Length: 309
Image (cartoon, rainbow, N blue to C red; front, top):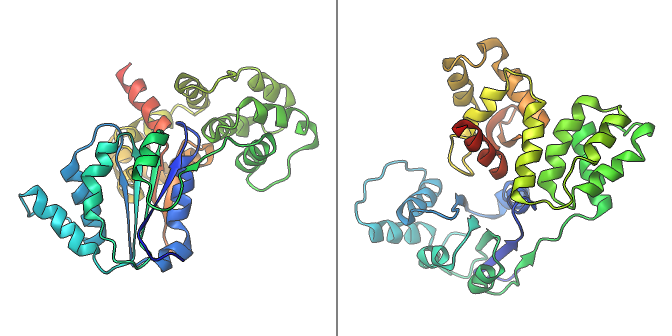
């Protein structure tokens, strides 16, 4: 293993699975054990440098107080906190070179195998921040991979019914290799797992080009399939910052306070949203219960649009 500090860039279009792939790496038990400290930082197009520094620092030190007034003192504190420790820093959704330049001096190279992972839509950004490893250009899923993912999401480990073996791959193919579309479509199909005519109807309703607006249409279809009591629960989650891991215990209390759900049904409502795929579990407790959850970026964007209507 190279001991020099390295930056690993994942490059792909919106909805192609960059963040989902990176989160799997970040939460892998080997990765957790291998690094002394880890931090996840969501950047996006508009960002505040000071807040980014503080966000990483809080995850490294566990200190939630902002007691330092000077920006460069915060940067220096972050650098000192990382110095000598094997760290993994995730910088999710970098849009511009400037964002990297604002952060890079805080990451010391003490030749102990530390790593920085970056997700970006722009290959030029990835090339600018390259250290040793070449950027990883995320490919679209192949048709058979798309079908495997669709089956996994719809049937949750059960076998696909024989009557869907012809139409199923057609639905997967129509998603054009975009994991986000496959996941959203799975949420729609999961309600009619054994209805070939419905699957065929969905297959021919998927646009041939997966643009942002296509994603919005797919999410709208998934949203329309939700029971009425689940819709405000999902829209509420769009109010959290992009990439924010929502504490489940707090979320359920907020839903109850807003009178979206009753206390005795709040847990099952969240489980329904996770099962339908607009919501993902990001961390679980030792007993398997959900501790934190997140919404996909496109789902959050949809929620914000819907709230403004």
